[in-house]
Length: 485
Image (cartoon, rainbow, N blue to C red; front, side, top):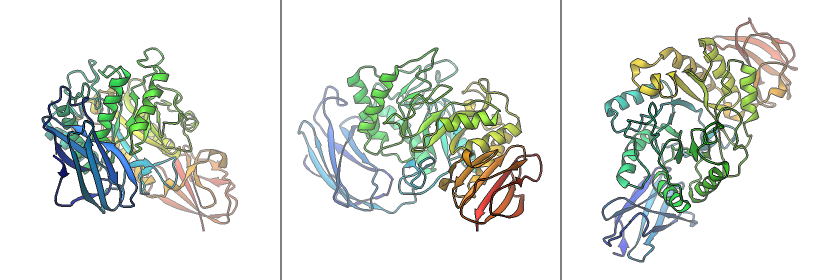
C-alpha cells in the first residue's frame, strides 16, 4: 500500500482545509483505538509539524490540515502498526479566508485573526437546536441568511460537541453524538460547520468538549482518545473557538466538575491542539475563575447582569486580561429570566459600555431561559427585531473606527467610559451627557460629538489642547471623539 496518495498537486487555500483519503484494508477490532495514523507535514519554509489522521468508517482513514504558509507542502503518513505508508504534496495558495480566529495582533485585548486581519465580534446565542438533524435544513438556511443580513458573524451554540440531555435544553434534538466515537456523527456536524465556514461565521461551543447534562468520557485514557479525535477532525477549522467545559462547570450549587479536573483537561487540549485555537472555560455568573490560567487564551464572562452601567464596566474590566480577548457570553440576553428587564435605552447603553470595555458581545433574544424565544426556536417570526436593530447600530458605529488600536482607559476620564490609543485618539461614552475632562497628551485634538442614538448626527466641537471641560450637547447619551491633528 506504500505510495503517493495523489498524483496531481492539490491546491488548498491558506487557512482552509487540506484533506486526503487513505485506505487500510487491515481488520481492526476497534479502529478508533487499535491503530494511529501519524503524519509529518513539511512546510514551505522546511519546518515540520507532526499531527495525526482519523478513522472515518469502513476501511477509510483521512488526514486533514489547515495550512498557514503559501507554497508547496509535503507530508508523510504512516500507520502505527506499520501496515501502510504514504507520502504526497499539496500547494497552499492565496485565500479570501481572513485567518484563524485568534487574538488581534495589534492589540490582544480584542479578537482578531492569525495573519493580522481585524474583526469586531457580533455574536448571537442560538440555544441547543442549531446542529440538530431534526431541524429543517431550509429553516436553518433561512435563519443563517437573516443572521448574515443582520451583520452577525458568530454564533454561540449549546448542544454541539455533546448533546445536553435535559428537558427544555437539548433533549429531543438529534444533535451529533460525538461520544462514544462514531465517524458518522462527526460527519453530521462537519456538514454544518462547512456551511458556516463558507458563510464566514465563527462558532463558539457553549458546552465545550465536556458539557453539562451530556454523556462524555470520564477515564483519562478515554478523554485523551476523544480529545485527539476531535482535534484531528475539527482542529483544521479556522472559524472555531475551543471551550473546555460548560455551561458553568463550577456552578456553586450544582457543579459537574472539579477545577483541578477542568485544568487537567485544559492542559491536555492545549497539548494536542497544534493549531493553537483560542481556549477557555465557561464561567458561572461572577468573576472569571480561570483568569490567568496558563492554558487559557480568551476569557468567557457571564455577567454582570445589570442596568447599572458603572457596575457593568467595572465587572468586565476586572475580568479582562490585557493579554487576551474577552467574550461577554451571557452579559446581555434580552428577555432572559435571569437578567433584569432591559428597556430599549438599556440595550443600547449596555451594548456601548460592553464594547467600550473591549469585550466581544454575545447577544440573546429570549422569552424565558436560554433556549426560549427566538434564541431557542430560531423561527424568524419569533424574533424581536427591534432588539437586534438596536445592537446592530452600536456595532455598526464601532466598525467605523480603528477600535482594535484602542484599550479601555478609565483612568484618563473624569466620568463616562473611555477607549484610547493614547497620544493619538480618545473615545468617550457618556450615558447621560454632562461635562468630562480627558487627560490627553501629544498636542492639539479635533473634538467631535456623536449622537449615540443616531451616530449619523455629528457635531463639530472645535479643538482642544488640554481636554478640559468638554460638555455634551444635551443630557442624552453621546460619544466624544478626540483625534490628534
